[in-house]
Image 1 (cartoon, rainbow, N blue to C red):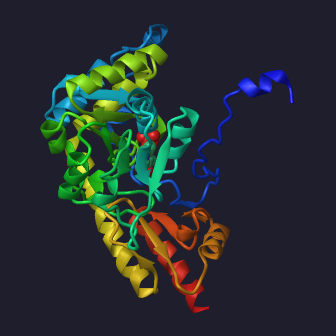
Image 2: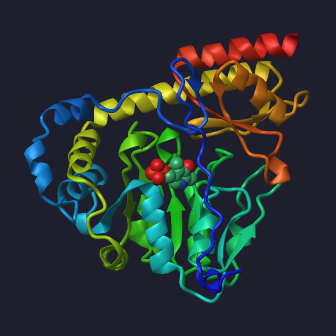
Image 3: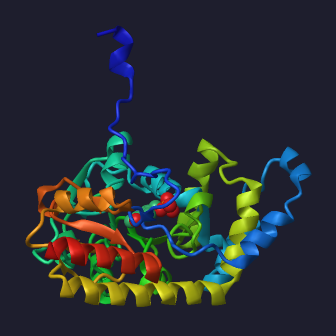
Amino acid sequence: MKNWEKNIRKVVPYVPGEQPKKARMIKLNTNENPYPPAPGVAETLKCIDTDKLRLYPDPVVGDLVQAIADFYQVGSNQVFVGVGSDDVLAMIFMTFFNSDKPILFPDITYSFYDVWADMLRIPYEKVPLDEQFRIQSKDYARPNGGVIFPNPNAPTGELMELAQIEDIIKANPDVIVVVDEAYIDFGGMSALPLVEKYDNVIVVQTFSKSRSMAGSRIGYAISSPALIRYLNDVKYSFNSYTMDSITIALGTAAIRDRAYFEETRDKIIKTREWTKEQLAELGFVFGDSKSNFIFAMHPKVSGEKLFEVLKEQDIYVRHFSKPARINEYLRITIGTDEQMQELIDFLRSYLSA
Ligand SMILES: *Cc1c(COP(=O)(O)O)cnc(C)c1O
């Protein structure tokens, strides 16, 4: 071993879902939205003045911050914008999780949390989900350096009621509690009212799923002005110009179109409920997902096998081989009605063969 080796920050990186380059495939593996972004996004893109690219973008991302603040009826000093919610969450870990005590998050959850904690050398403890893959509030009432969980949780799709979230917040007045709401628009109640009620709560959301803009990388946090200020201080100490000027314009156009957002969201919810009925008929077992995916297993075929046979049909879903408890499950993103029909047709013929 070379001497410099010992001073390298060695990390085990997060592994994102595959992005296969196939002309014809059904891509249900990374929870993207099957519908295009709001029409205003394409119009804005056509009008981009490329001469403006000479200039640095607005470091405070003012237009987009204001548009998000308008949408949620909060102050613009309560909004922090980042390059995808992954960026927002990484900044939150860096800013708020600096205790000697471990931060807490579920054992089965978004697999980026332990990666950031490891990279930033934040101690953590994984809190087991119950038998039904649910988060139990009482498990978070113990000494810790911060709490984070998605609602609905990923990859299970299980939604917590606001009262349960409030119980976690009440039990943790001395640390920051982060609610990762990447999927909240697909049928859950946002914890935003709790941001007004408690000074230690941060809600994080993204344009990647319900707003069809995973490719643009836009995420945001809403919290008290004090916490948003701390977050901005760290961001500006790291890289002040993270979001480019084109993305700022496109994101602003997207969030201003509430009607389109609601229409595509409702379509996905309807397709999800249809897919649940079909999967149940085929003998699949799954919880009552309130997200844009269904986490399902079949008692007769292994998760790995199903993943492979679907892939042979160019139908991509997500399979997690670890931890063992979820190894029989597939996470199936909700696509268009036609895509889900094809998936169901194939599964029906495969399972009856
Ligand atoms: C998709 C996802 C994110 C990250 O989304 P971005 O594309 O970075 O905005 C964060 N948390 C959870 C739970 C997710 O599923």
